[in-house]
Length: 238
Image (tube, one colour):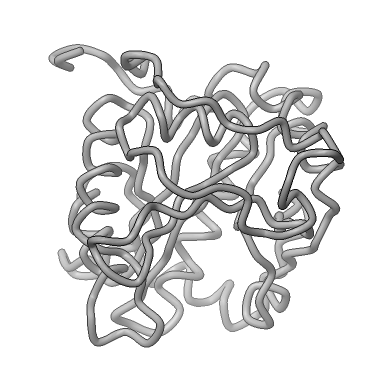
């Protein structure tokens, strides 16, 4: 099971309080740090971090007014994608840093993962909170995604591919992992993708209001981890 880090010294605003400044925007806070306890506290309150434009800029904390989520039984798998799933092997947590580096490749358009973000999620992975779902072919990492799992929440952060459909196949693998369990538990699991994009919408991602997201988040956090991410704590240095 994951190692619980030291509690954060920062306090995040209550997103349900309509009187709080800035709560009508996606960007709800600036500053704090990327210590494991801070990042986990943010996810548990419905926020996630992104870097500013430079390493000198403060960390930005977002909670979209309209949140992108993928219903687990709403994933759209085309015939071509279903064929592609037969071409790749899905692995979990065998190349976490490789997946992050693939997502952070500076040649990718609109890249946002800097050294601070990379270090923060590598540490969360070491503690058992951040996970990668990987698509492999012929012994090579062809694509994948990574995110944070807390209870029944999987907060997806980024995905990449080096071969056609590899990231989509990894997403199929993630959904299958999240669908593993009793139906009443699976029903309350939550796959958060932050924002809906046209590409993600084509895969079944929908938008829900922040208030609905926070209600679903509360239910998801009360659940145990899916088996694929529960792992073993043998050898983990807490």
